[in-house]
Image 1: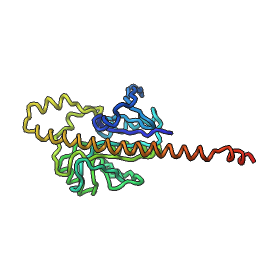
Image 2 (image 1 turned 90 degrees about the vertical axis):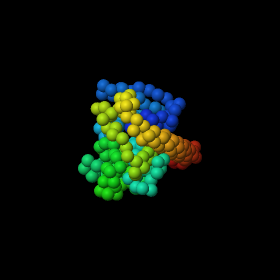
Image 3 (image 1 turned 180 degrees about the vertical axis):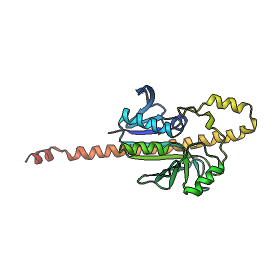
Image 4 (image 1 turned 45 degrees about the vertical axis):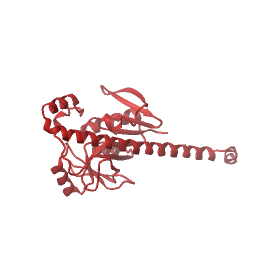
Length: 249
């Protein structure tokens, strides 16, 4: 069975999901990529942002030749009714750079991909302008790359910050490759105690979102493996000796 490639921005989004999986390093165009594999699934992290998402999608396509690509991870809520831990599987992903849309069969609602960390005011603007349900930073780039290669795409996002939560300014701690510089951010926080409560809430909410995402992906993985096994059984049942003899005439 062909593989499903799961692309997440950050390791903590999928760390529990990939626990115990086979880990390998694969080279591609001068870079080394860490892949986690189990059954028909392969997981890789891209780093934060659209360019990081596009680059890793290109690498995964060349390295794995996936049957499908899933963009998974955290998202911010753009609707009051969405709470931390809710899962969004959109029917359309919108690229905020040009307003283009990527339709996804079987999804519900919409996700917009924006170029930076979104605070409460920007969330309101995006909600008013696009009517989207959630916002992330990679899905549109991953989906666009999948589309160029005619590979089916879906997005699975767990809400990590609600509509009214004011995200801290974290863009400055993302390097040119999309990697979040945790040590620099920790140093920044160490002398700004007024931000500690906000970061504590964000960390708690991220943990809740990661748990929800883990649960959803486990169910999706089990469903996919089960469906694949059933299809295989049907194929084997169809190719009985009687059928073969009959085909020969």
